[in-house]
Length: 431
Image 1 (tube, one colour):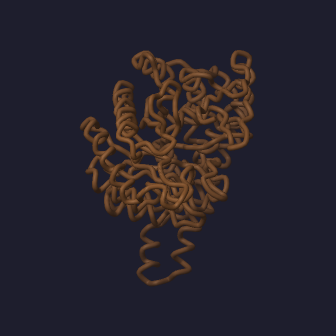
Image 2: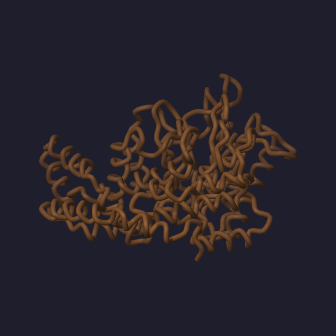
Image 3: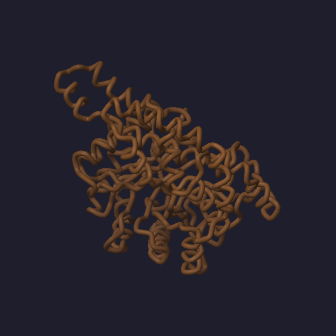
């Protein structure tokens, strides 16, 4: 296995601060022991955590108004994988990459797979794109894709999704995420029921093309770019469509795709209860679909989501294996630094959820002790598990402080020599 960053630099970084980590880890271990919890078990649990990286996330994102090119941003899928390899090397929490077609469409899937394996990376779910028109595309998605009134447009969108399945299969993926921007910007623009009927007809064709071991993830979004009525706008519509399509169709939750103050953790509980919770796109939001770094605005909500996930595992066992992916847009930060930070924050919520005393919580709930029920969650959330996460990284061969280690290597400056920033060209593929 090759590494992008010299492993000796990681070892040198860790050696300088290992003593501080050992002291912090021992102190936290003593506190947890008084609660009856084993820090070594929690560290081993942290080492099992994995979240996929979005290939487009290592490029500089944009807004509706402008995009500011970043130094050393990747220009093709191979350079994207190199950046993803840096993130995984320094965190050991991001072993897979989620590709987006046609942005990442390989001419030689076997060569791309071999390139990824060389960096100890695999491929997670693949993502289709029918919310943009691509160069040379015969039909336009301006008025819809899978829901379009034109049969030719729908056929093109279906064919693209099936092509994504074929490419993903060649790369070792086992899932397809389908998000569409279809909807209406004006009342009367289209028949609301008819649009959903056409969506289901299109999705049935894609569903038929899924390999036996694949899942289809239906992603919903409240608004944008359809601002009056988005066809797949909420978890209820997503659930109904997944149920209609069959057992290989699941619902995917993007944390930014909801109205402000939506109780996302309750949506998690509902979808899990009925066997349709497929996975998550992690990010954070202040106003709408902001695609901010995970945990940067509302870390308590992220914790509450993982608290529900821990409850699902407690109820349903290890067979529950949701798909996790980061989905962010980085306009003013180094994308590698933001993705590392976000992976750590999601992992933090995962470990904190394991600190919840479920027996005590259940007792408080049965006794209608509202305050103590809430405090049982708050105690876990307030516990700083940073030293557990850092120790898990050390034991997995990663960096104690990934961002500090990354900066010390000068990676961004080095790749910037061969990847000069260029206006109008984005490694994200978005703008």
